[in-house]
Length: 108
Image (cartoon, rainbow, N blue to C red):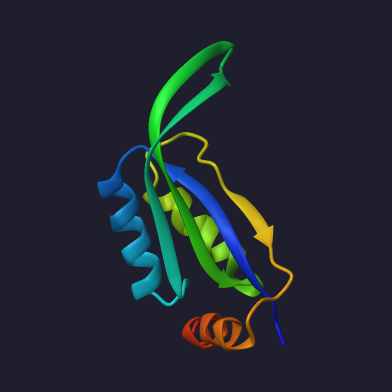
């Protein structure tokens, strides 16, 4: 059985994250997205230390779709270099894993 993965990303606002997340679920690229509102990010960008308020989005999908999910993030994201990290899972509850795989089975 293929393993699910999580794709971690951030968006500058809840509205942008919700729009992108809904598009991924509607397209069958994700079984679910979790959006965690308002965190503070402190990071170095182009030589300067920056501070921004962002939201976290965790995309639940199958490993075979990770590059398509990453492409959708890039397509819907206003940042020049959006955060896109693939987080492999060690499996999980079999029914939950099947649900993720079933919900994303229609995309090749």
